[in-house]
Length: 181
Image (cartoon, rainbow, N blue to C red; front, side, top):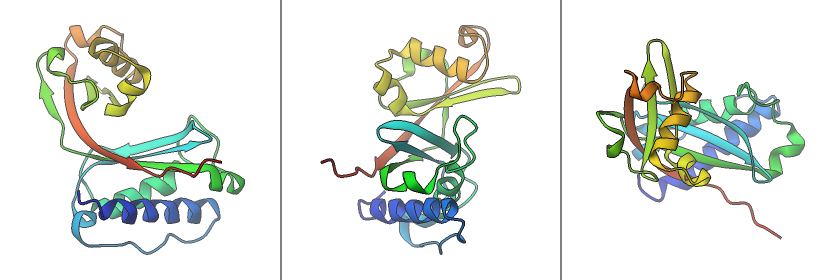
């Protein structure tokens, strides 16, 4: 992704988030370059440094601009872990976007590079995903990372040893940083 596409995507995400919170129609989409590429993405929001929501799609089912706009709007009120974002919070919301490369199945957790790879764990109808930055933020080693991905999938912590499939993916991560003062 070209550096000039980052501010375009972040601005689009912010417009979509603000429009949803304020009850206005979705903003027009930007197009061109990387914004037209079909790929998975996640939008994460923080308020005063605390996680406030995170939603994403691993499947490349729409152009990136549409995916990011939809996710940014949805993360404001559809992450079941959080109450909807209130308009008073908007000035303190920071947006982070993770653009995902396609996942690749691995045979051993030794193939996982903490800080580079995100994880998808699948067993039966259950699956869990953790973005690459999660392991770094928590200081996890690869086994701890896998255990937490299993838990996210509502599997036993050792499911990865007993037939669960493990996929890794890379993500291009960028975000807003509010001025401090």
